[in-house]
Length: 258
Image 1 (cartoon, rainbow, N blue to C red):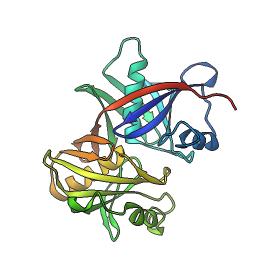
Image 2: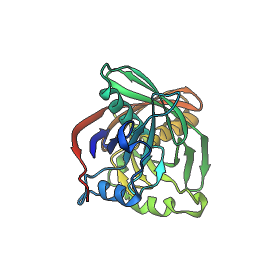
Image 3: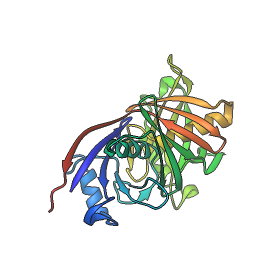
Image 4: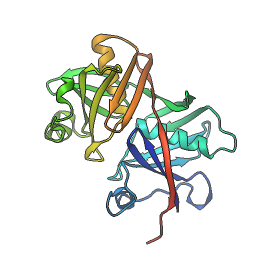
């Protein structure tokens, strides 16, 4: 079974094209996903992207976490749009697709994929940080920018990810600098549920951070820097934002039968 390896600002994915052939409607098992995503015994990835056909849209996207659970992934959506576009005989600059949280659009702007995300739950202060839902659940915590690199994210995030206040879904935990760097970017780091570890970046977490900044200080456009790369967020409405950033497709390969 052929796959594509995709890298969206440090979030990396295994892409499987299930739109045609005998694998239409097929789903990998949780154990297969876990093995493929394993950094030592598999291909290594933050999740698996499935491209499928669907009526009324250009494609349907399914994102599977390394533990096999389905979720929405902003960087996965950007990576899938760039990959889908690359598979066309004549690339187009616009697409409509569905994901687990509903309908989305993709646009190719300034040589980068840009997708829309919905703010399903407006920012809300809690005793743990600010909660916001951008396709999946996020907690945003501000930190002085000079503390961000050395901060022990796992010590903070693991108890919060499983905290009863966020049961049963749990939350992703994002720490975000309270000031920008010299380039006007907010540094941030994210612990992702489903991956159960810090990832190099997180698209829906970046939109969550932007939603909190917009809610607390105003503005419609924000720039971010994660350990894996840069991203931008522009709000089209209070509940709709556009996420942009680079995507690379470093290699293709084949998953051999076992």
